[in-house]
Each structure stands twice: as C-alpha cells, then as structure tokens.
Length: 191
Image (cartoon, rainbow, N blue to C red; front, side, top):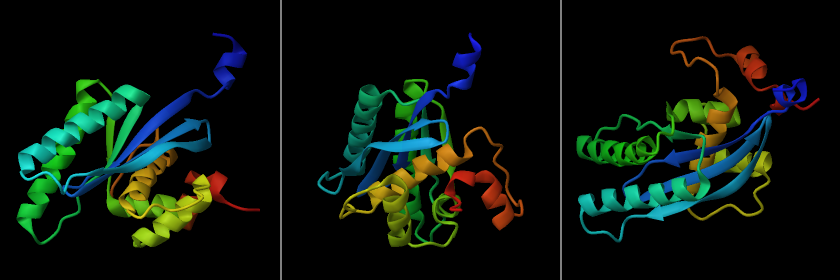
C-alpha cells in the first residue's frame, strides 16, 4: 500500500436503526474520514401487521433488503430504554434482536448505543427531545425537510453517533464533560 493510499480515508457506510414494533426507523450515512452525508433514511411501518411474529418477519426481511442494497460496513442500534411496561420492553427487545440477526447473518458488525449517548453525541445534551435531535441533524446533515415520523431522524442520529465514536472504546461511568465532548467532536466546533 502506497503512502497516498494510507492517507486517504476509506469510505464507510453505516446503517443506524431505531428499533420499534409499530414504526422502526433506519438511516444510512456515507462517511469518509470526518466527512459524512446521508444516503437514505426512512421508516418501516409495522402497525398494519396483525401478529408480533409477522412484524418480526417483516423487520428481518426489510432490514435484510436494506443490507443487500447498501452493503453497510457496520450497523448501529439504539439500545432499548428500560420502561415500566415489561411486555413492551420484551417486544422491543425482540424487534431489536431480529434486526441484529439480519446484520449478523451477513457478518456485519453491530454496535449498540444508549438513547442518552446518541442524544449527547448529536446535540451535546443527553436529555434532548426527538425534535431537538431532528433539528440538529437538519443542520449537520443538510436535511431540507424533516420527515413526519422522527423515528427516521432518530436512526440517522444513531448512525452519526457511531461515526463520532467509531474506533473509540465505549466506557460507562466516565466523566463526559464539555472538554471530552470537544476532544471527541472537533469538527462540530465553529470558530
């Protein structure tokens, strides 16, 4: 490999997934070094399917189709948050597991991020609302018009979070103040 080839950053495609049992968001970004752009984003509507098993089948089929079409280098998923309703949590975990199985069947590496980590990475605020995340993505990714269902922008946020953290060791309990945020995201600082 020549020195020039070593310096040129490799293009990578990241698929971000916001798991859901009614609506599942997905977003694909193309990265090259610190640069990134949207390839595609949208939602998988699952409400119309009567049984949970049929929803899981459709998730597997649709995610597999997206993986076949775009051949991403990695898949990033938002980890389910711990809610009060155990049944909802179980169904959400199954939906996430099926999406993971689709990626694993194609030997694509998977990374999970907590909702708080995704929001922190994109907005600087781990408690940001869906609308705040979407507005920041509109700026960062140049989205002309936000979609009606913000599950799609949530999935883009997961993909972008993965891009920002790719290659870094994920730790828990680390003091993540503004200094750490600036060090990890130098391209997000306006001078």
